Image (tube, rainbow, N blue to C red; front, side, top):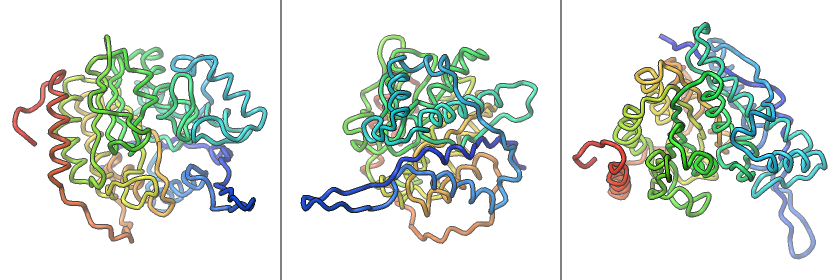
Length: 372
């Protein structure tokens, strides 16, 4: 049986124009090497895949709204908001480290954050018979910190949504699970010293941002133990991610008992992504989304919000995201994946990394005693 799910999207997300990648050569010549990795085709292709496989017709389509300044100020500084607004008004293309935009980009970033908030509205409305929502939004958000834009991200959508949920509804505990291949350093920074939001990041170790997301970064003060980093070695595939969810993520979620689960869903751990060296394919994304759905059902009254983050292989991103929606909705399409990338076996390196994570996390959470 399909699980009722809302789909949040707006055509204006296509107006966030990040431009093209250009090489400047010593000869004075330049080379146009194509669109920036984070471009509008990403969300257009995902939407097209969901439409043409028939999944979208079973989801409730909802339009987002723009986050107000007071919503952004729950996690960002006034200086950062003013800076983003000023740069976009002036037509500055480089908004931060690896962040590109246009005059419309600050408004679209507020629409993206508002899409995350709208997802919270839907799943927290007791009169609404829908407990889970997927927001196809851009720009992504998890690298944006309180006072900076970074890595394609202007405002931190997941953080804005979590703070909004706590203050508006109110909820006592929110868990953010981030499976984007890159560490969610902005989300970590925002919630590092508090325990109302449990942040859990599964990412490729020592990748982007470099040296960010170390296992030993567990939070401080009231937040000690509530920042969970799970760095995995390059080449980890679906089987390794499944072990992480079963032996690390699920036990902690069961103990934390969140009132809402938010997923920062970057499908860039896929085996064809140009900005990743992992090997999670569609069945792996199906499994992760299904496991999170089951966790939400067991702990958060089935309240689940999934927010689009990264994913930069235009041919495979829509297939990987199809897997996420299939796992969320418990409805599987007949689409046949044409990419025959074999699943990666579990290596000793991967098992040793997971075991190291388990040992560190057991200082703050009850974990099974035997080795994985």
